[in-house]
Amino acid sequence: MSAPVAEERFDYVVIGAGSAGCVLADRLSADGKRRALVLEAGGLDNWIWFHIPVGYLFAIGNPRSDWLMRTSAQPGLGGRDIAYPRGKAIGGSSAINAMLYLRGQAADYDGWRQLGLSGWGWDDVLPLFKAQEGHEEGANEFHGGDGPLKVSRARARWDILDAFRDAAAETGIPKTDDFNRGDNFGSSYFQVTQKNGVRCSAARAFLKPALKRSNLKLETGAVVEKIEIENGRAAAVLYRKDGALRRARADAEIVLSAGAVKSPQILELSGIGRAEVLQRLGVPLVQELPGVGENLQDHLQLRPMFKVEGVKTLNVMYQSLFQRALMGLDFAFRRRGPMTMPPSQVGMFAYSSPDYATPNIEYHVQPLSLDRFGEPLHSFAAFTASVCNLRPTSRGSVHAATPDPADAPVIDPNYLSTEEDRRVAVVPLPPPRRIVEQPQLARYKPEEFLPGAHLKSDEELAQGAGACGTTIFHPVGTARMGTDSDPMAVVDARLRLRGIAGLRVVDASIMPRITSGNTNAPSMMIGEKGARMILEDAR
Image (cartoon, rainbow, N blue to C red; front, side):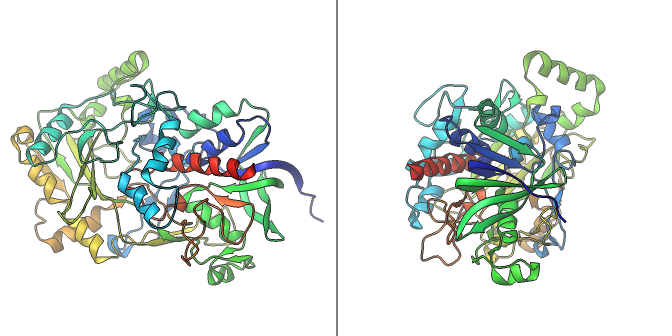
């Protein structure tokens, strides 16, 4: 005879303490009256490398901090499967990500509104970004000054990166000082989610302060088995913690915020999704929504790398114990220097052709090189000019692999599966070559070693792109919002799940189209908007 399931009641149950979930936890519990529970499968962020910015080098690929997921074999990448890092702690992937604060372009959100999704245009979401932001330079037309999410300028500069910007300007890409005003054309040092040189994750900004309230409870190590549906309404969440099953009932709403990879898996294990997928899993169908797990979009990055001479890069500095000691002292006493670095310091937004109305290519320029994150830096001086197609047309999927919620889902980004994506993939590789030929960089004798200067033709460049392509960690779209006329829409414009009352999806999975930049800031904005809609509908 099985043991009885322990049960608690709350007003709100939030599944996932990631970028959006932390925002929801804060906003839904702010009045002190409504009881909220947050369920997080990972642990606490009680490891130093969650907080020191350069810790991403140690966190990605580490089982303590990363779920260590992988994609299926990708034909567009030469049959390779690739690592798919996801944060394994409160804060979710904001605990291990690049910390780059990028909202995307105004046209991204206006495009969502043009799809019939009212309330999602740039003028609708900009106030939400500002409400969250505490920019070190204070408030202005585009930035908030007193929000909990701390945003700052880079605290380390590099001659090699300054030279790259100078050289890019010679090729027609201007310098700018802010990528977050709706038009991000140009090059600049990135703004980062840091305070005084320390990572400001979603947990640090939103969840931890909120946990001081008696009406908010957090459970870590809580693996959700399923959302229980009673009479067409989401009534409770069944989860496992410390080997025991528990049930959390929600009197108001259940909010699924497990991210673009886990949210569709949880929906499918709850009987919500495409009928044939559920049949394969042996899960009884509760609500057929064929869009669950479909529409996966991600930014594929290609990583051209160049050896250099006569200039400082992190590769060589890190080889020296003395230099590492100096870096540690600089961080300890001034909160400056290389230990405050995000993976990429300089960004550049450009056009692959005049056919695009807004920049469709993003470069991440780094004073370092390595085979992949989680592996050691190269032993020679080098820099990387990673590039991604901001608006891929390839669409992939995420589906549960087994009925066991602890098993990783099948992740198939389907990279480079369209002719347009293959064409755009080869276009960005020549521009860095032109940039390094400019006098500002040529003096450092840059030598391309990946994908290789010997690759010249479009066919050769396409093969090179497939050989060195990898994720930039921006999965979105697997529970997309849409209008009533969209048969693949999973949620409506107010993020309510179709066909099931009392259940919303609030995370990056709801994006109908990926934003033109890093997706962490948009994910937190979605958490902000979702919380406001939940509270409005509760009145």
